[in-house]
Each structure stands twice: as structure tokens, then as C-alpha cells.
Image (cartoon, rainbow, N blue to C red; front, side, top):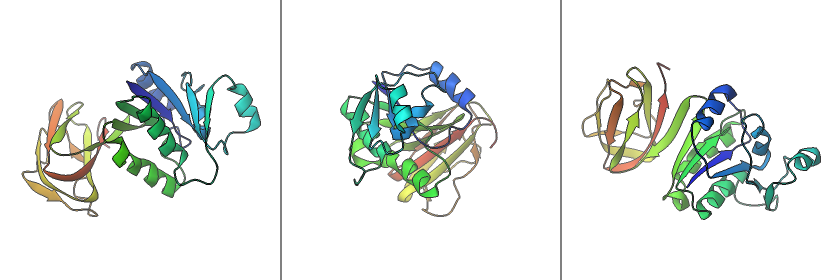
Length: 214
């Protein structure tokens, strides 16, 4: 089961996002609170809106009155996006795509990205779509990156160092190397083939694929 979550951040390159969404099949479409406002722009029909509804005006709620609302109190430990991700997983989603996860607030952008490492979402593949860019996590034993030669690929360690990294199909290869949390060594590599393989023995990598040279 695949889920799409609309987040209340910046909708970067909406025409590109519309095209990407149109090319896929999503079984569940959720709005994380005011992220629901992007449904019309992206030509999708919401199945539910998750959150405390503090960002949705009465007028906006009236316009989507036929949509299911899953409401939470304003004072809570989780963000609306976190609740939407957990809801999608509870409904059986194995793959989740988030759009609008990045924006003007630095704290929310960082938090939204880090949510893809949420321990309760281990069974899901979660992707962040930002225009034509895609971000996701790679955990041991590794994973593949598909694209075109010349595409930009960045590997960023999360939650500490990532070790035992060996890459195939990238211009600047790594062989049983460690990427240290903090330094930007893994930024702006390039695909040499339509597919690259990343192997690692420990840690977590945030992989970011950007078509063409970033």
C-alpha cells in the first residue's frame, strides 16, 4: 500500500510534483493539517486530514467538509506530520511519499526530514519529494539509487557516523569507508550509470537524488 502525505511547507515546483504524482498510484492520500490545502493544486483527492486543525480556517474546512478529519489536541508531543505518518503506517502503508515537507521554518524542515528515521516507521520506505529531488534513508545492508548518468547523489550520515560504506556506479567511489556525522564529505557525488549500489555495515544514510547536476 502506498500513501501520499501533503505537508504544510513550501510546494516547490508544483508542476513537477503533479507530473510525478500522476505517474504513480497512491492508495491513501492524507493532509497533515494545513497541508490539505495543496490537494487542489496537485489534483489529488484527500482521504483524511490529520492534526490539531489549528492551521485550517473554517472556510477551508467547509471546502473539504466531505473529507475525514482525524483530530488531536493542540497541546501534544507529536507534530501533525508525525501523526500523519503514524496514521498511514497503521492503515497498512508500506511506502509513503511526503510533499511540501520543506519550507521557511528551519526547525520544522529539519524535524520533517528526520521523521523518516522514526523507529515506529521502520517497516515503511519513506520518501521526501521536493520538486524533482528525492530524499530517503539507506540502512544496512544498503540499497540502490536509480537515475541517469550525471545525476547528483548526496549521502549524508544521520544519527552518528555511517560505516563500512562501499559504492558502485558513482563517480567518486567509497570502499569500506566511514562518513562522519557533521562534515560534508558525502555531498554532490555523481551517477556514472543508470543505477548505483550503496553498501554499508552500520549507521543510517540520508540519500538525496537530484536529476542533472545540482
